Image 1 (cartoon, helix red, strand yellow):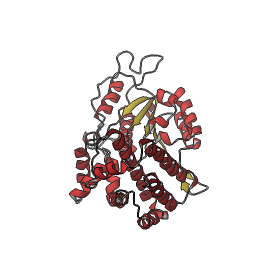
Image 2 (tube, one colour):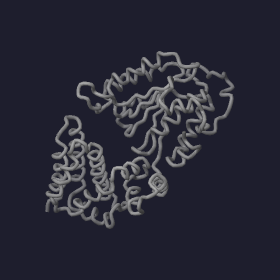
Image 3 (cartoon, helix red, strand yellow):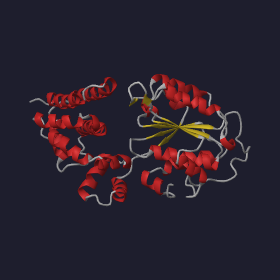
Image 4 (spheres, rainbow, N blue to C red):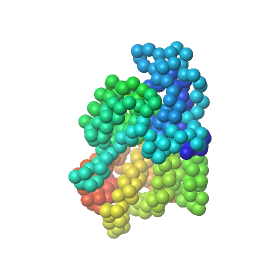
Amino acid sequence: MDHPRLTDQLFGHDAAERLFLEAVNRDRIHHGWLITGPKGIGKATFAWRLAKFLLSRNPGVATDDGPGLFGDKGAPEEYQTLSLDEDDMVASQVAAGGHGGLLLVERSLNETTGKMRKDIAIGDVRKLTRFFSQTASEGGWRVAIVDAADEMNANAANALLKILEEPPEKSIILLIAHSPGKLLPTIRSRCRALPLTPLHNDSVRAVLAARFPEIETIELDAAAAMAAGAPGKAIELVSRAGTDLYRQMASTLVALPTVDMTQVHALAGKLGAIKADAEYRLFTEMFTAWLQRLIRQSVTGEATQDVMAGESEQISRISSMARVDQWLELWDKVSHLISRADAVNLDRKQVIVSLFASLKATVKP
């Protein structure tokens, strides 16, 4: 169970909680809510807290056709927080995955290949239709969480849109989206937004220090800087030795225009291994984040926080080796290559080598 207020304080959910509770207390709970923000910021944590609250408290619902279950008087009590008692039975059922009023929609296993699908397919979304056609337990809410909605393919997105256009009674869909711009505009327009914002570095450092009391200060500072205000990302970085991986990558990048291809091939061989899927994805995120940082610094002239000592000065030096339009062209090329690698299962070792080769070609003397 969540400690009262602790989760919200750590993950910066206070504003989103107030917005949702305002709708509850006004008896105007919308059928679709879009929870947005960077990866690792706690969107899924917040969605599950909303689900526990709805299924445990069972507040009223209003529609465009008239007032809610409590008539013009609204809900019988003013809710001040999403937090529940530690011994709340319904919340415990939700946490254990045993509540019949909750459905999680996410990427599923491809039975043909034995691997997780790259996106949420229409079959995954069709589970919602069957779920919402069932009678809710004790006349309560039926809550669905889609994690993450921006991973739906086109057919799945259209199927979800139909549900949002004609929502079943006392149903709510919580859409988690890392990149809401990828969603259909018609889906976004049918949802109320609950944006979550990045935390200050001090708050991220506090989360890490509590989770990893043995962590050294230098590692804590590096992970907090790399996480850009997302505690979940910071935890992943520490858990997967992401700061060490970043230093390997950055030590090669800051040597530009020279690139030690022997070092690149060694890194690519390590990350291209079958069991290194998580590390490979972490690397591609860090590579694109580093390139994004370089472009931003090139355009604005403002240095960003260093992960490695003197890094901003090196990035400034490297950014002067090409025009902004060339950096933007490289960004498009890198993004396309990483996306295509996932789509058609390209050799990951070669993908990493190509990333460094493309960067080297952009800054050639």
